[in-house]
Length: 273
Image 1: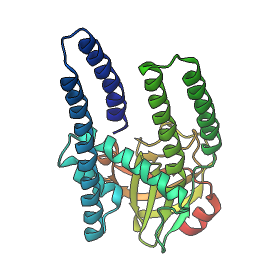
Image 2 (image 1 turned 30 degrees about the vertical axis):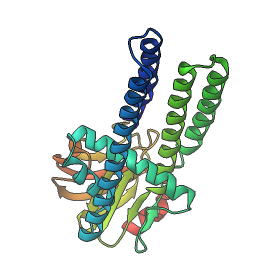
Image 3 (image 1 turned 45 degrees about the vertical axis):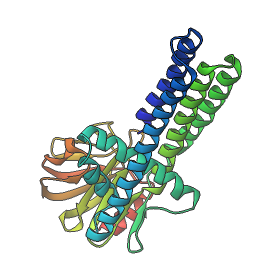
Image 4 (image 1 turned 180 degrees about the vertical axis):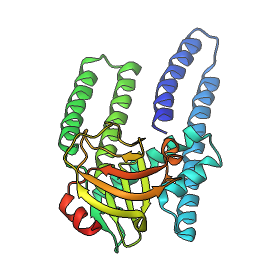
């Protein structure tokens, strides 16, 4: 969705510029130029309305089946779009939802679940980046002469700031969660993995260096989820196949241990032992 908006934010000013050239050269009359702009705007409006309809359908499906919203969103999106597009749309919708939840002081944690936050190492750094990007966007806006290029730079800058703020919000409002029947491991709106509680044998502190620095990967029989290249918990599990996850690259791996990071390591260790 963000990419589509960027494309539309680029295309619309270009369409207007081309129209002005054709208009003043006499090739295109004023009425035709207005109709072209209306066509582009109406197309965007139709897509936004369709997007809200899909979201409503996903929320309804999640409530009926008890499925998590992130999984329901991707399932519904996959009915209308290719998998890559469905994942991108699901991600952006969850980012916007995260912003709303953060502004209203809520987290995606059920009443019977224990939250295990993991945003500590990243949020301060991302907050600084957001401020710097905001200053850069404002500076470019002031330096570039008035015109469609200036407007385009402003639109792209604002979209970038919204995305960064959404990423920060997602890290905060979508923590890991632990309940009597499952451990849910997340990384913002990017990763969502569900581990049945009965599959966990033991939990212990991990002080070594993780074998991978990717946000989530399976390597040598281990699921590794790091935050800022850190992992501080190790779980021994029964052999698991077909992991419940939104990441297709993880789904088909067989694992018997999990490495992950949480700001509440002691809480996690006590709750899991």
